[in-house]
Image (cartoon, rainbow, N blue to C red; front, side, top):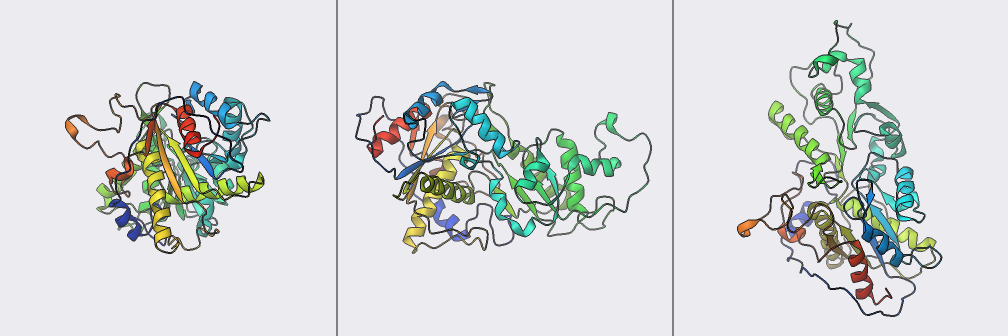
Amino acid sequence: MAVRGCFSAVGAAPWLWRRAAYAARLPGHCPGKGYAVGPAQSPPTFGFLLDIDGVLVRGHRVIPAALDAFRRLLNAQGQLRVPVVFVTNAGNILQDGKAQELSAQLGFKVEPDQVILSHSPMKLFSQHHGKRMLVSGQGPLVENARALGFENVVTVDELRTAFPVLDMVDLQRRPKSTPLPRNDFPAIEGVLLLGEPVRWETSLQLIMDALLSNGNPGTGLATAPYPHLPVLASNMDLLWMAEAKMPRFGHGIFLLCLETIYRKVTGRELRYEGLMGKPSILTYQYAEALIRQQAERRGWAAPIQKLYAIGDNPMSDVYGANLFHQYLQLAKCDGAKELRTGDLWKQRHSAAQSCVSILVCTGVYSPQAPGSTGPAQGGEEPPFHGHRDFSFSPGLMAASHIVNDVNEAVQLVFHKEGWAL
C-alpha cells in the first residue's frame, strides 16, 4: 500500500490485511417485522454507530424511519437508552454545528462528542500539528483544522492569492499582468485534505505545485522530491446520497483525480501519511472509545461488548464495520495484540468483542438501483468503489444484515439483544 510511516492507510498492519482478506463471507439476513417484545436490560452491553447521510437524512430531508428509530432509542425522559455515536464521512462542518444540526433534525439533544466527522481522528497526528499545512476542502476549513490541533494552516485560496500565476485554467481568473515574484512566503510542510473543494482545477493544480516544489510553489525544482511532503486525507467515499435519484461525487473522486495526476506527472504513487474516515480501523477505534466514554457518563457499569454499525454504503460502512470486526477477532486470537500505530492511539484495552454491520436501503445501496454496489447482472462482481489503498475483499463488503431502513435496523438489534421495542 502507498502509505508511509508507522501508520498505514487504515491504521492496520500488513498481517491484519492479509488475514482479513481471507475472512469468511458474513451471512446475510433480511429480518421480518413484528419482533417479540422482551424485557429491557439495564445497563446496556451494546451500542450503535450510526451513519448520517442515506441513513438518517437525504440532503436536508429527514428520512421518516429515522424519527421512528429514535422514538425507540429514547426513554420517557428523552435520554438515549443505549450509547449512540454518529459516524459520518462528512467534514465540511464544525463538530458543534453538526451536533446542533442533528439535534434539530432528530428532536433530541445531540452532544458534540457524540459526532465523529471524517477528519476527527486527525487529532491523534500530533507530530504534524505544528507544521505549516496547506488545507483543501470547503466550509470552515481553518476552524476545523485548528480544532483538530493544526496551529499553522494556509488555504488554497490564500496560496492562490500569494501566487496568482499558478491558477490558469479559468481565463476569467488569470492575472491581467505578471506580478512580481515573492520570496517571503513561508514554506508549506504538509497537506491536509479535509473534503471535496469547490474549484477542483484550482485545488488540484496548487496541491500538485506544493508537492512538486517541496512546499515552495513560487519556485521550480528540476526533479520532484520523493518521498513528498506528508499528506493527510479524510473521507474516501467515492459516492454519497443526497436528494438526487443517483449518488453524487464524493471526496474519493477528488482523491482519485489527485492520485492519477501525480502518478501521470511523476511516474510514482502519491503516498498518504494517514487516511481517515470510514472504512479506516482508526475511525472505528475512535468511535468505540466515545461509546465507552458515553456509557461511563451515564453510569452504565457493564462493558459495551457489541457494536452495531448501521450504514447505507457497502464500501465505507459495511467494509469498515466488518474490517473492525475482523480486527477485534484477531486481537482476541493473538492475545489482544494492538495495531501497530505507534503513539497514535493510546487507550485502554477495548471491551468490544464484535462489530455487526447492518446495511439499509435508503441511501447509496439499493438492490434495484443503477450504480448500486450490489451484485452485478450475470453474477459478475460489482465494481470496486473503495480507495486504492484498500484491498478488494468481497467478504468484507457483505453485510451481516440487510434491512429496509434504520428503524428496522434498531428493531432487529433490540430483538437480538432481548430489549423491549
